[in-house]
Image (cartoon, rainbow, N blue to C red):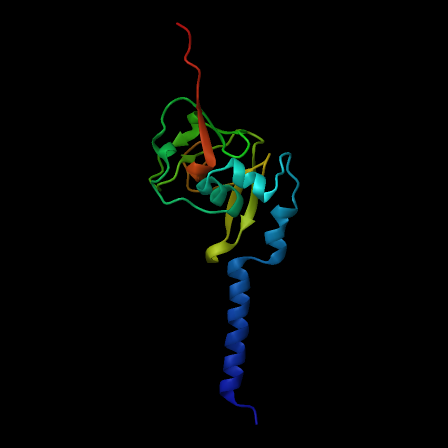
Length: 170
């Protein structure tokens, strides 16, 4: 005779397994970006030698810095924010705004320099953004930003370097 507890336990287990797979993303999604070819590709050892431990965790392991911890959060000079991994210009200071989230935020990247992939970690579906040249994880983009785009590129500041604009000759 089939016990109702066994049936409920089996159904709950299957539900839990499928929920876990959805929360962590499928292997195909995880390998999607890894299979993508980038102009700059280095070994793990080469990336570790070039980047600080915090930059490595963010750019190569999709880590996130503590809110409010990046010095670039309060950077208000004119200039360009570039990838800390390959120095590709990613965001102009003209598109930076104060989002109140604790991470540097921009409403638009420099055209063609940021790639996007689907991120299903932490039980939500988000759009991850990465450097199109080296594949470094930058953060995520959300649709709650200011005009003119309505987008908020929420970027880990330690994945960026800032290059101030040259002082104009007067």
